Image 1 (cartoon, one colour):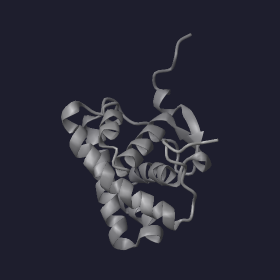
Image 2 (cartoon, rainbow, N blue to C red; image 1 turned 60 degrees about the horizontal axis):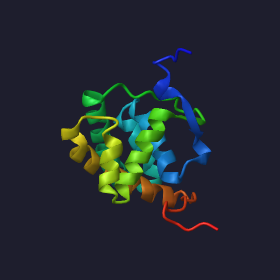
Image 3 (cartoon, rainbow, N blue to C red; image 1 turned 180 degrees about the vertical axis):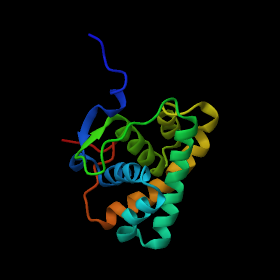
Image 4 (cartoon, rainbow, N blue to C red; image 1 turned 30 degrees about the horizontal axis):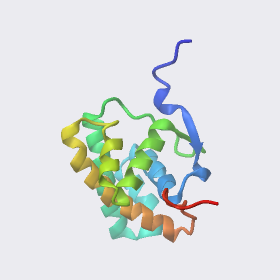
Length: 154
């Protein structure tokens, strides 16, 4: 069986309503980023206010600038209002939230899937800053966040 190499990054792996709030917002930011920084800022203003939305958009834009210029390949995005989440979107969103939680080594490991080694630290730091804002925005939107990976489940 031959796989379509162009579809790999767009392959649906989840749905927007199944992602934790911060990751869902990161996917929405990724989709809005392609329309320009004003679109992403407008998306974030209701949850963060103008100043924090601009700071988040700047940090997220830094991440995407690195990925766009130095990425291993172009990231594939779904449409702005699509309910499914593609593989590339899921990886980027997870990377941003892992960076935000302070798991620096794990964040850099995920980032290594996207860019070369020398760019891992600056990209992870920008992702951490953006992720903290997105986490805060998710809390303000009142969505539930998933359990931490280390939580005991019965």
